[in-house]
Each structure stands twice: as structure tokens, then as C-alpha cells.
Image (cartoon, rainbow, N blue to C red; front, side, top):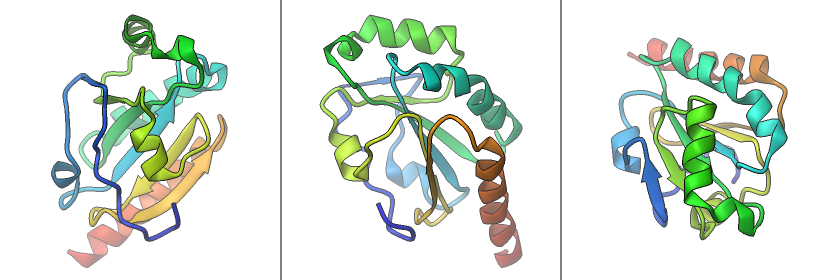
Length: 151
């Protein structure tokens, strides 16, 4: 995805965990962070406490959605996904993308990967890898500041 492109529709989930959301529900009131992760990704698990802190710190200002992206056959085990999500306290909605439909819509090749959309659903920031939570926070704050100035 390129910057300023609209958020793809959240279609093709083989399952939703922790509740289901639509693109229409995410757009309009507040920005959205969509993060891709996988049960087989060690870096994803390492960065999850940071993502959770981020989710909790911004809970009134930001929508947070997780997307589970399989990297191998083993990653298709729904019970393992549920168990890993519980172990790592992923309480936000999880789009289980076992057929990689959302992954393809995002043209995503990485886990962990983070996409920040403004309240109008336009992509404002993308980053991949385990580090860089400070940069992610900076970008989210910039989108929030712009939103506050516009009101």
C-alpha cells in the first residue's frame, strides 16, 4: 500500500476473535492502527507487550485491530492462534487471515507490520519489524494532532 491510499475493506476473515469490525465502523471518529502478526513470529511475540501498552494508552483515541497472518501450515491452527492471543493479552479484535485475503489487499509481506490510518481511512504510516514503537507513537500522535486542529 502507498501512503494516502484508502483502507481496504476488512473482508475474507476465516474467523474473527474478540469481536468483529467493519471498515465503516472504523472510519469517521478516530484513527486506526492495524497490526499484522503471526503465531510463528518470535519478533511479533516480543513486541506484543509494546503493542498492548500502546493500545491501552490510546484506547479512547485510536482503534486497534490485529490481523493474524499465517506464514506456514502450522500457523493455520485456530486453537493455537486463540492460545497465543490469550497468552499475549491480545484483547482487540483479531482478523484471522488464514486465506491471506486481507494480507493481499494490504500488499503486506511482513510480520510484525503496522499500518496507521487517519480518521478518514487514509494510510498515513507504515512500518515493519519489531522495533520502532517510538516512531509509531510519534506518527499516531501526529495524526491525532491534525485531527484535533481540524475540529
